[in-house]
Image 1 (cartoon, rainbow, N blue to C red):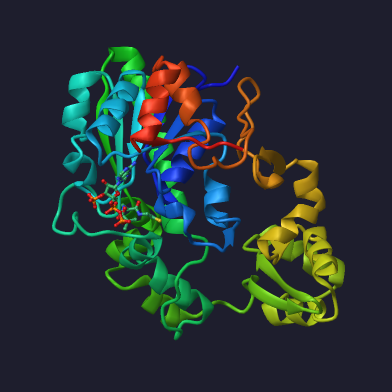
Image 2 (cartoon, protein in one colour):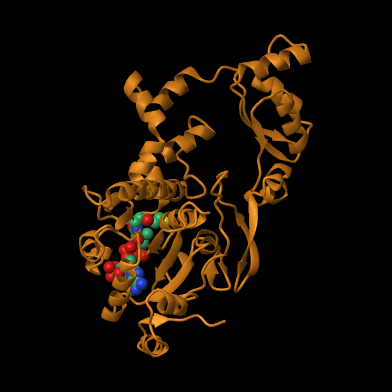
Length: 386
Ligand SMILES: CC(C)(COP(=O)(O)OP(=O)(O)OC[C@H]1O[C@@H](n2cnc3c(N)ncnc32)[C@H](O)[C@@H]1OP(=O)(O)O)[C@@H](O)C(=O)NCCC(=O)NCCS
């Protein structure tokens, strides 16, 4: 049994934030149909190098879904989409605010067609407020929420701001969007009512930076300036340490680990410099084993692909192989939480443009072969053929 197996998601998401959200819903078993323009959505172009015409990020973020290519600038395309809405529980989109309303596909319109629809509008700055019309990518939300500033200061207290890696301003809000949708399903199941959800990158990233804003409010001083004034105590085992073949991360604020080190190494004091000295002749693997031998929270610093060969990740089957019509197979991270009763699973690789157009028109909308042919000939839909 899959926890969302009876849930149908009509997915208009096009780049990172939205596609990650709907991939998580697919991982929980929801039937996700992604609607793309016949020319492909912008996520296919990047970021990430193009693999046989499609960006590697699209290949990573659009797994476990079905794909249909419909031109929504044509009235017949909008009519098809409205038919699909009637068959759906959830609508998700991450266009700039107003784009769906201009197409006649805003919440108020869709509610008339499907009164209990749950409509998640994902955006940069939210559906209202002075900045709400502005387009946004992850880096925008990371900057305005304080993460970019703090990331630079994390390198060195005098360092200029540094953009976070890995589009955290998409992935975090994407998870928050999926979480909110699941909560709205619970409400609908109890009351029969749908609702509109305004999930945006900025509010979410601000929420992720709560420790810094709360610290400011409590001390009435910038927490980073405060850190600069105070410095880190030399006994705090925290930081990135160079070893023979790379670096390790020590995150060891754990007094009992320090006590263990003192006792076993026969020293009165353990400082970060002392540990650095010890680690300087070791490899990442040796350093990691040495540190965890004292229960110091730590890790080798990998480039992401190195996780493929890590014994722990291998044992937990953290990467799974998925089939793809063009690539054959490739590995993606598994659905990251393990449920004892309702396991999550992402079974297929990214959708090829128009891969399931015919199947969805035939099976969901009960279109005849002649109707499908006409839609294709009129350029309303495109159909992928291997
Ligand atoms: C990411 C973003 C900046 C990209 O901007 P963009 O490429 O100019 O796209 P927009 O969202 O403004 O608009 C999408 C357009 O595609 C059109 N479109 C979408 N699906 C379509 C389809 N199936 N057929 C025809 N047209 C389609 C829309 O109608 C809209 O056209 P319009 O500008 O004429 O109204 C913007 O979508 C955005 O800010 N989104 C919210 C924040 C977010 O999620 N960012 C992504 C994080 S990586």
